[in-house]
Length: 516
Image (cartoon, rainbow, N blue to C red; front, side, top):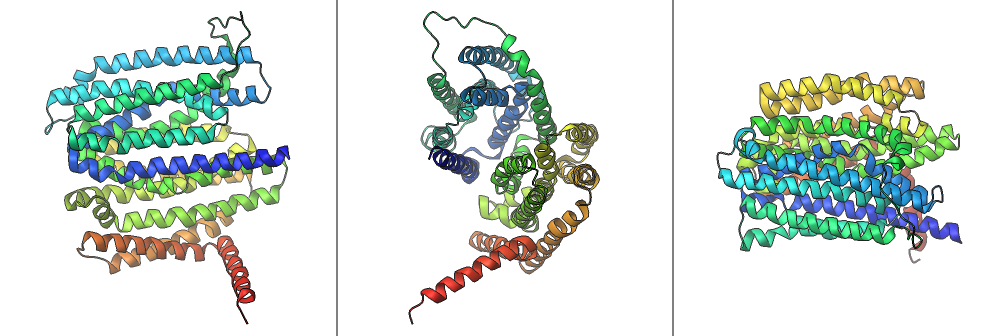
């Protein structure tokens, strides 16, 4: 009875977590055209700069947030005592608070330099931009501090509460600001002041919930101040930190360089295109989060057949979902942006960027599978080496291409580097961990689906050339996604057979249920 309850609770937590993530992501995308309408492209460029600052600030985490989540889970599992756990929480709070104060202080001091010398602010008053950067500095520090408490809550498996709270904060952050922009004012000063207040509210709620979940200490027991509790978990933290740093450096270097090179208006267009291209990652994220623990479980059970089967099935499923989205975004880039924003100028400016980043993200979703394989095997050494080599090659290329050719150079570097990683690195991983798998996986599980989805996307693109209304663009994009997805599904042999079997069963049920 207890096991059944636990299984149901876990499933419910997972569903609640995914629903919350999906809602926050989608609502953040849906409101963007309204931001453009009321704030303008230049001010939206500041929003993109804010998002980039948050990503870079996460480099200072050093893997401590996932470490706290892990240690919280271990405490609830009985692997550590309440006193040690409380001391670890206090030590991590001290580190996070110190880094937040120093980080925010540095950015506040540099706000004038950033506004005058880094950002190109032709359309906005310099005082507005400098004030916005100051609000960003405080907001980034508060949201980063909130991540520590979010780790403690997720480690306590309070996913339902956390999902609901994230939905509430996401609604306030993305939707709640619209009445403020409409009725109070649409300047960067007002927008970022509102975002700072929401960040403060978010931190307060997460901290209060964390302290509610912390174990109570016996009367008279003192926690004290010591960094000694961090030492036993430092190695795990640094491993996670390296992986996270690779991801930040890979995905944010182009945005940092372009924030220096481009006027804010053009940077706003770039941010829009990258956000649209992120739809490829959004539709496949939940699959990856569920796949990793399941592969780990099968590896622990020594079920090699089940492990390989799941790995290949999941590859086909991700290709079947991600590639139609990626190819449609690339083939119909201008129509996608026209349907989304309703602005013909924005659509024309962002289409070339969207094409390259959508294709790069499509490759990235498939190139992530060797990481899942190594994680399940419990051996990330090759992943660390490959990531280090990838960064050494990517960062100079990305900086040079961005500096030389602007947004198109950044897009080409992003797509090209992911292709090099896919072609050069993945065969090595497969040869090391699953000899004989690579060519079957590549031919039957990836290329077969990619060829069909790409051909259908190009065919629809050829049929739909020429100007169209916004409603027509919505219809064309929707029909394209449907038919390319259907074609990819039919090309996915393992998935196709399951769907056909399900349809046969459904047909038989309908036949038997029909009245005579």
